[in-house]
Image (tube, rainbow, N blue to C red):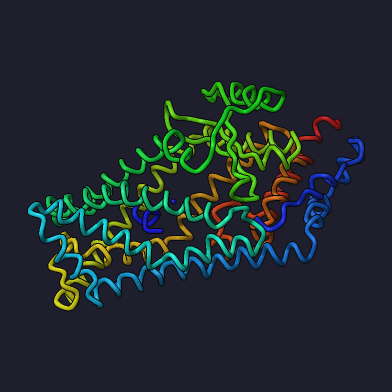
Length: 425
């Protein structure tokens, strides 16, 4: 949670849906002319039983409250540090160091560790018990806890480094710290994109080359046809953690990697696998990684300006009570986190819309590259095991970082009728 704020970004699997995928009659001029997108889409929507739909809706809508709960957790942590004296206690320990950067680093490490401990009960519920309650997790508690410890280690290493540099920038540039701090954070974000596929992701999953076969060759062929410079496809063992299907094209430059999880391979048809991989290749071909870096950099710059403005106001009013001299005082870290968390909360619709637009573009690329509209619609239904399939328009704008299942199915059926008209005629 803390790391996300500072850097900026399943129910039951429907095996029956894959086995009972609707089969259209033989295509002809007459059939295409009478093809009804709404009717065809409804055939897919009907794959969800009322119980499955209610379960999916409840899980996804619960995420709205978890988002709010995450912010309230940050608010509580800041209150404990600033109003109950925990920050002053840590400072007394850190003050034994002679160099200010070492003192700051000690404070940062204590802050990150104690914040993790305070949020741990919330994390246990949201990340373990709730996931099991909805049938989305395959993890034992020891395995879940071990991954939390890995995450904590990454936060302590990378989070402390980033925060320490930010506070150096604050001291050196004073009123313009938010500009240079944004630059530092953007460079750090790009660095994480670069190293993640090679050094971070393997800490959580075992990656190995996909076995030779028709699916691998079809994926590589599609990659070559669309100018994606990869010569291998990797699979990872996500089934030890979750029932979700997923895939990705990750990395930048030499670390670019195509990966898909074993749930996708084991629970989907070959056509569905190809459709999912076409979507992921679309992100690369359409330069979404670089575009998202630009978009989220702008979000980050605005966020740091927001933090600068409101932290100055709050410190002016509560400096004596909280023991904060100025923004560059390391005691301001809990306040920094809570103000930035608030900014992320209110910027959620903007962030989600940026993400959702790129996902829609990748969906359209998928349909044109894989040319499997029924497989695309079937995958949308399988993803609806943990995503509310038919949200309200405002609900989708605010909370969805991907298009809803309804939108995706109707896009696939629209593509189907418009493109298959050519074959029928």
